[in-house]
Image (spheres, rainbow, N blue to C red):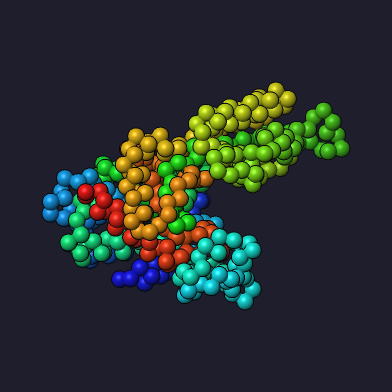
Amino acid sequence: MELKERFLKYVSYDTQSSEESTTFPSTEKQKVLLAALRDEMEALGMTEVTMDRYGYVMGTIPATPGCETAPVIGFIAHVDTSPDMSGKEVKPRIVENYYGGDLVLNGHLTMRVADFPELACFRGHTLIHTDGTTLLGADDKAGVAEIMTAAEYLLSHPEVRHGKIRIGFTPDEEVGRGVDFFDVAAFGVDFFDVAAFGADFAYTVDGGMEGELEYENFNAASAKIEIQGRNVHPGYAKGKMINAIEVACELQALLPADQKPQYTEGYEGFYHCVGFNGTVEQAAVSYIIRDHDSEKFEQKKVFMWAAVDLLKKKYGDEVLTLTLKDQYFNMRKMVEPHPQVIDKALRAMELAGVKPLVRPIRGGTDGARLSFMGLPCPNLFTGGMNFHGKFEYCSLTTMERARQVILNLATLWAE
């Protein structure tokens, strides 16, 4: 099956995950595609194909003769799409030899180069975009399609030398939360059986722009502050009322104004208010805290505690309750001791005619969690852009190059 056909087939599945669910995976419909991938892997001739009760699918491309002692490498992608926008009844549109101008998504919506200047990088490419009513699902069905198309090639070309290769597909990468975001039920790979996967090293195929190679990500924590106010009639409130909404606003004002997502880039961290609800009597405010540098990350957490303590001194210990939890950590610590993982990825890109673009992830990936679970796992590009919304698109041209990078890695690890 050609890469384009495979990708269009996968995005026809609605695999949207849910932030409100208390199950894992968060939606049963993810398992429909996962089961289809299991069946496809078996039909292609993979061995050791499994799908466990959590939905994780694994399979093996056996080593070619003489390469049995090569390191076992893995390629991993997630099947779920973001809760931010519907992935049901996706209607992809294909633009051959993109001329470089604005893209009309539908009669009411245009993706303008003025708003998305990176479109200029894709002149001459074949693009696949949405019709403006759903997301596309390139995150991460582009990665799934690239892995499966590379796997099919290896299985049908036994003359290509490679070691044992493990393939893994996972649910719920986009969420990792239960009913309460801060009472985390599970992240996408928390139940991933690293020992059963059996790879020495792996790559998640879940990046964006051509050439991206990422092995640094944010250290991440969540913070929830519950505020117990005191409501009395406003006409008689002097010296009595504690307005929980205003206390939450005071907390926000105490945090560094320049350390918000809209003012940061590169390695700069931030505090990000992601949720608020409340009344005069009771309120709750939720934050995520991010920084690449571990010392600065710890300082940010300490600052959050200090801000809450300051308000406790003003209003009373019983008014504010802070719950602060670490979520994941910078994978660089776990990947750097294995420089060959990065060196081979750089070489694989060069052989594919791709200029490597090494930069930090301003977020997290399954690879970050897997790296701390004992499987060093940097992240490779897919060609998808503008994830999680109606302006999502991907370059089929770049997807073909990503597939070639996967094939190059397979052979390089067998040298």
